Image (cartoon, rainbow, N blue to C red):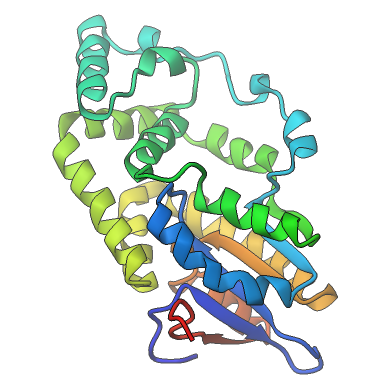
Length: 269
């Protein structure tokens, strides 16, 4: 593995497999500058008959996923003290223009993800993931998901509500710190600093890093390995999953794959 790891795009090869596959680190961001930059990915996507995101964004797949599968017998308003809920709602509305009243039955971790997405929305109309999916669809690629919505929500529901609520309240207690952390993550992403992205994500996840990062990485590698061995594949997953001792890159290497960064992939010419 190259010592220069500052790249979001990696080539994946294995002895006996004729054509390479590619692994790209994404972020759930709506940012025109980032999306425009990803036009440089088109030749790599075109070279692979199979395209995969973390989740299948196909409308048919989404139609089979009911909102009832997201919600559980939970109410944030009824769980928190009245003054605690009122204060949190006011803070989040002022800081992020986000009203938790409309997401009262959502798992708190999902609410945090939605708040984060508001900070990651700059000037784009679609997320980077959706943009890449559209590029692949326009080129008639076979499109799949590495994970399923059902699996992700099973993981979310397996986490203690106490921890999820505590995490949401911590944002309300220091919104400026949270905003700075997200801004720094976006900066790391622009600079393709996958090691820094991993370290920050690991720190943010705290006691649930094993469930949301390490365990998921192991499961995703099983699926990614099968895809790569069946067809040349372009696979795009969250950039924080790439690095680390239990990261996708290291796990693929342990499975006998050769991984190498494609440096300067976004530079014209």
